[in-house]
Length: 397
Image (cartoon, rainbow, N blue to C red; front, side):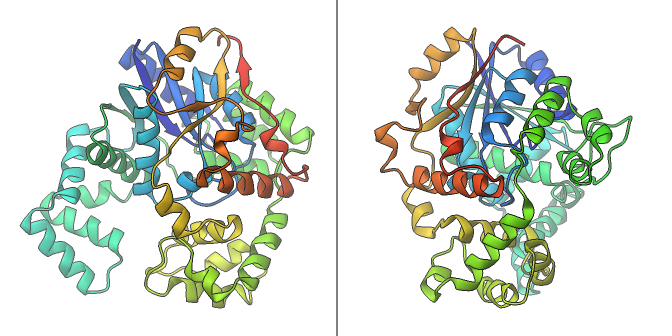
């Protein structure tokens, strides 16, 4: 049985995601698609528009056969750690192929860039050191060094999906994961804020349209099943209110102790001091990020810091469980009996109930409970709601 895996957020699941899954099946001839999905909070550190259960249902009705959680402890990280955790889950679950979208569909070129970053040549090392010595941030310095050796590589690394693609390839190498990479060309702009009739959408543009109340535009970018789910969740009031999250996050940032600030993951260059100072006079998290972000302190990194503070995620947690130690099943097609047996026999333990006593002692689960409850609070739902929804099941698509 050939299993292909995807690492995703589906925030929400739109026409571009459906096309990616369809192309993945066509190109790989896979028997089943396993989606590893970020849960209540995304890689950037923002609360997801819909619950993990709703997004898992979208994925299943859009072409996935099983959906596995990528919990907040592993999802709310930089590209390198996000990719390693997702790759580790897919490999541990028995997938033999990983499919990802990228603006650059030249897999050999992406592999060359990944190899250069992990095993730098003398030329790359010198160019990187020179850029860093001029005060260029590390990510930009890597782009500059890569471009010096391979003209055009810097432009490739300027796109977020290409960055993730390179991170996936590096993770496969670092973990020696038995995954064959397949790249699907991405034709839409990941950062686009507007929806266009003749182009595949970006999730950000869908969220923007939804937030401003433009239902027609938002629904036009979604498969019919995803539109039904979005409408259902919105009418039921199961959408987080950004104002509630802002209030909770700013309260947390303004009341943290020195030791709590020092415990945050990935601190360097005094970034926590800038965030702490800016939080004292900010009224919203977007306003805080806008004021605090600089070339040295990029917005995505600050967003993740705010999320780590809000969710109580520490560097100790990350060090204790650098990679997933178990997998939580979010959703499954009803006719996926052979896949279910395969997943149960996988190298990584598969949990189907969040009440499983074995989870209580795991760092990721404690962080996940906090993340789920913060999301529920923002959506006006009772504590524990997201952990009582159980495994989503749907009929064959």
